[in-house]
Image (cartoon, rainbow, N blue to C red; front, side, top):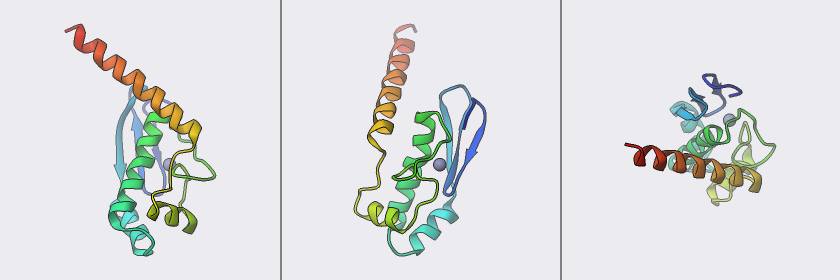
Length: 116
Ligand SMILES: [Zn+2]
């Protein structure tokens, strides 16, 4: 997703930012099921990683993909192996950007509560 309101779609799902902040992410169950049927990850592991990937798009504010890790556009065999070992993760820069975005959102939420 490059701009607010645009829909971004990749292998296992899609995400949409309507207001400059994350607003919706969807997961394609048939794609999650296909990943699980390869036999390297459980259905729950595939679903959880697909959800993390789409939420990553929302919090990172970009449609960009990485060449490695959980933000890779299409997971290959080694990615699924890492997922099964709980090692398919965000890279350190992505993780830091996500933490900052969560902090901003937390501050906005707290400020809106105190102004009521
Ligand atoms: Zn993606």
